[in-house]
Amino acid sequence: MNILEWADIPSKPGHWFVEDDHFVPEESDRNIAFWDDPTPEIEASQESIIIRTLQELEDSDP
Image (cartoon, rainbow, N blue to C red; front, side):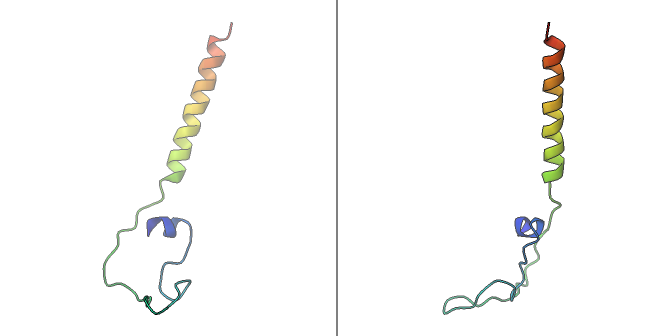
């Protein structure tokens, strides 16, 4: 559910869920915990590692 939320894909009944002979979309009474998307922090961390590695390579260059 979090991935759908982060991608701005509707997850409520009636948006893109299609009723058929075996499935009827209906809102759940269960509470679902939604978490913030960690992608921006992961990307920033990876970019930092790349920059640091490139700087170390420059420093070791004769």
